[in-house]
Length: 389
Image 1 (cartoon, rainbow, N blue to C red):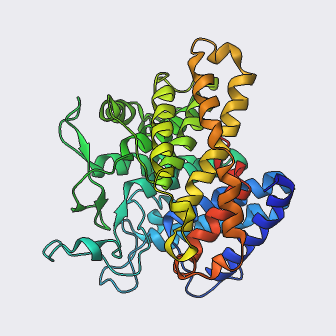
Image 2: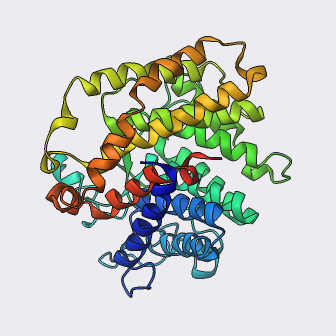
């Protein structure tokens, strides 16, 4: 899918998303989901940068407000009311992320004394660390586009809360770990195991936020301690996965890492090669499953589109390395790693073309997750809003 064709299709998809989730035209009961909405904010900002149409920026800011006022508050079916942070109405409006943000699942969370049901837990509300990091990134992007420091301040407050509540163990060293899922009020874990890439997601976005705070005067917004803790949790980890969404995340992380290396904002220079190697192993394992040969009803669009988004990140990474030899010439193997990975580049267009087919978008596997599938297809077609710092 050529970029000139991808942009109008992305605009069409994002306008459809805005309408069907109650963003615009505004609905009395908008449907908000944190992961999807984080990508959507980035998409709207990217469309604004590419078209100079103020309507796209307006939708991004409106979406941020909706997310904070819905997912930053208790559910309608919860006996608790108001901001999940416990702040009063006025202070909650001023600091909407300090208590975290709900996932946005259809079912209420499991109570602390309720029995655990692994399958049912996927449908229950709560807070996910890796969703929160996506929202931190989206808020940072909003701050970069608008110049309004409130958005990055909200991102940093969310980062501090998430680290404090999701991590457990000694305050230093490799023994500290993270919970995968927490209760809505962050008072107890819902799933105590650690997400495979959660510390990595945190390390990268916290470094991005810290770079945006450079020269700031508020010590309370400094993330140095959290970055050190996340770096310790990442030390020596193998990030390899055959999950397409996870592979795409690693490819995107590699590009974001390289962008920070260019600006001198990322102290973990050796991580880039580690990520690229994990991507190579993961892509090889993923393609060995032949899942891309299956019919639409047996495929999950948003997971596959994670790979296509990541492959677009890889294209940009290759250009960045070639254009900044003074930064990357100390590690010539990076260019070779990227060259090897670029052999998988045609997969992006194959995946996009499959899910642009209207017949495939009528499969239950697409319609059952229409919001997230629509947004991530738009991200793949016009990826710069999500990929460019």
